[in-house]
Image (tube, rainbow, N blue to C red; front, side, top):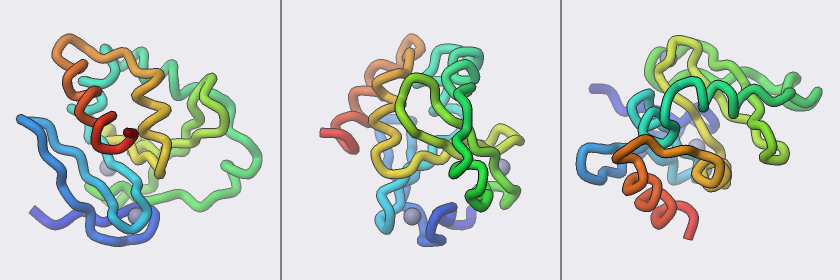
Length: 131
Ligand SMILES: [Zn+2]
Ligand SMILES: [Zn+2]
């Protein structure tokens, strides 16, 4: 498998593992890539994630250049999170995953609804990236 590149600055992402869960972290900008499986663990059901990411994009966010999915290279959609201030995530429309800039993972963990078995992963991520 090719090394994934950071969608923000192109640096190689570093895989961080815990049991069978793996997140990809950028040492350059401190952003984190969550793939589809990890998103499911952190959000019980796709509906919840979709709902959380249905906030209104600001004019500034709309002007930003689209980032590329580290898996397929396609342009990602910008999605604003609801009730979380100005956080804008990038999601691959093909469902490969979600990119979170520095600090955004902390907000996601706060608003997430872990699925059964996802609490431990949430705690692990919090310990790694938030505390
Ligand atoms: Zn980066
Ligand atoms: Zn993709």
